[in-house]
Structures are given as structure tokens and as C-alpha cells.
Image: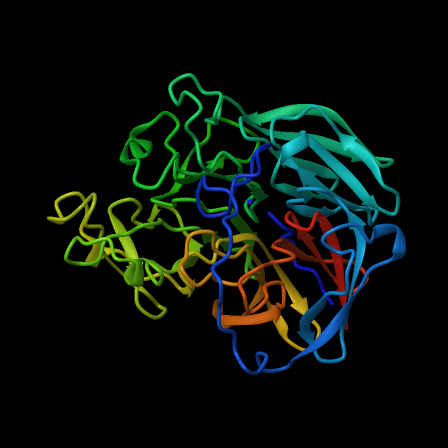
Amino acid sequence: MRVWAARSAIALITAAALAACGTNPEPSPPPSVSSAAQPPAGLASAPLHVPAELAQAPLDEPRQALIPAGWTIEVIARVPKARMAAFAPDGALLVSVPATGQVLTVRPDRRTLLDGLEQPHGLFFAGTTLYVAESNRIDAYDYADGRAVNHRTIAGDLPDAKSPELRGAYSHALKSVVVGSDGAVYFSIGSTGNTSAEDRTATPPRATIMRVPPGGGPAAPFATGVRNGTGLALAPDGALWTAVNNRDNVPDPQGRVRQDYVDDHPPETVAKVTPGRELGWPYCNPDGAPPAGFIRDMDTNADGDKMDCAALAPVEQTLGAHSAPLGMSFTELSGHGPGALVGVHGSWNRESPQAPEVSFFGWHNGTLGPQQTLVSGFQADDGTRWGRPVAAIAGPDGAVYITDDYAGAVYRLAP
């Protein structure tokens, strides 16, 4: 497996374990949820291999996953509230833990690489430089001999729950970071809430993808209207892509908030990020099959005077509403070819919960194809869950490594 320059990048959990698509905690599941009679094409049920020393709840009883036929999946580490991951130049696997302020090395040895940080989330290596996205700043370190040294701040004074003007009201404080093929540093700033239009005029503007020029300098908006672009990754051609969590409780075109409409609207977004791209939030929402156009948000733009939604470029790909895509990375996957891996956290607020999974989007002719399920089985027919993937990245050994903040685990998926 050849790994592209992008590693994993992006989100929604705090020390109090905020849920993926909003601020609500994990709800009690509904009494019954139907599931497909047959697994997705090419997948087969396989046992999750759990070493005895790692068999704590919820992995203290046998678990089955749906994975590509002939592949295996095993637990290689237990990391409570594990989020993003990246491989260091020396092959070490790093995992961020926003809830504890740490970046851990989980392979080859379990140890603390960085501590005392402010909700570290996104991790990215550019050569031997490690970039860490904290909730209030973007940092860089020199990585040498298994240590992160020579700390410097690339972008500071970023908004989070401690920002005085927000008074603790921040649903999407976690940030992600990548270094582009142009040498610029790109990072996400999520929205403070569901329809908080004041984010667009804040300093710095929230609900954006920001860019720091090569060599440093002030960060400036690169793309706007990005409600919560936790997934950030570089495609094989060097283009920047994002996976976006869109809004909750959206009214229908008649302005009514109906559960049957909310359940399936708006879809989540997987979009190419180009200079000045506008993804509409909170005035416009994607709608329909990909490439999905935009329609007016009846809460914030009922008359269309805030933004002309029909003029926005359609988004390249989508996922089901409230799927909560988080980490995103590009790779060449054995048996699948090049494409993007996306950790799908699953819904917290849908009547029939969207199931967590790891998705794969094939790369064809400079764009991404439709969503395919690579790993699932985390959710039972009654809606209960034993896991919720966050990020999936390719390892130097040809395996895929998956973080799970619900089970507190790191999985190795191998052909």
C-alpha cells in the first residue's frame, strides 16, 4: 500500500465527551433499528481479535465487524477518547487525546509524546516537522529521536470555549491541520453552533478553512461557510479536501421542523477546497444526490437575501445526514486502488441512528467517487453501539489503523 502525502487530519469531543454532530451526549438508543439483510458488497463478518490484556469494556465480550473478505481486524491499543492519528517518519504511531491534553505514541511503545496541551486534535507530518492543532492554536515541533522538540506557534489566539466573547459556548472547538503541496499550513475552525451567523464576521472568522502562507504570516480564510470541516486531507494531485458535519434540526422548504425531514437533511459534505470556495453555511444547505446543489436555509435565509444558494458550486460527494464524518486521509488501498478513508462517527440525533463506519471514496480522474463501506458492524439492530470510528490512516506496513473514541481503542485492519 502506497501512502499519499496526506496523513490523517479533524471535531467535536471535549473533556466532557461531546457528541460528534452537536453538543448533546450519546443518547439512549431507540428500541429497534432495522439493518440491511446483507452486508455491503465485498464485506464479510469477522471476529475482532482482542488480546487478553486489552479486553476491557466494551471489548470484554466477543465483537464482530464487517470488513473486506479475507482481511483481519485486531485491537492494538486501548486509548480512552482516542481521536486523530499520524505516522511519524520513524514509523511510530501517534494518537491525539483532546480530553487529556496529550499526544501519545502507541507503537512501538506506549508513552506520552506531548502533555499539557489545549485539546490537541489534528496531527500532520511534513518531513520531520510535526504539526499539532490545539483548540486555541496551531503548533509545530521538530520530531527527532522519538521526541517532539523546538516548539513554535504557527497560528495563535484561535477561538475555543475559553475565548471571552464565547463564554464557554462552543460546540466545535476541535481543529485539524495539514500542510499543503504549496507549503502553506491549512487548518479548520468550526462553527460555534448550529446557525450562528455571527461566526462569519468574527475575528478570526469561524466556520472556515484557514491558510498560513509558506514561511509564516497571518492566517487568512481560504474557504468559508464550512460548518465543521474536521476532515482535512491532501489528494494525490495535491488538492485540499474536507469532510464536513452539516447542521441539525433543519426546517423543510416550508419552514417546518419535521423529524422525518430532519432525519435525511442536509447530507454531510465531502468537498474539494479551492481558494475562496463557499460552502454556504449557515445560509445554504446541500441537497440531493452528488454532485449536490444547495437550497436556502429557512431559518437564516428564507428570502434568499443573505446568499444566492443556486449560485454555489455543487459539492463533489456526500454522506447521509448526521453521519458525522471526522478524520480523512488519502491512500492507495489494497484491492481498492487510490482514494480517501473517512472515519464516520455515526449520528446522535437521528430517529434511526446512522451507523458508524469507516468509508472509502475511490479516486478517479481527479475527483472522488461515491461512498463505499470499508468497515462496519459497530452498531447492533437495536441501535446500541460498541464502537465509533474517528480516523483511519494507512500505515507503512500496508495496514489501515483506525481510532475509536467510544470504545477507547486503536484497530489494525490488514489484508
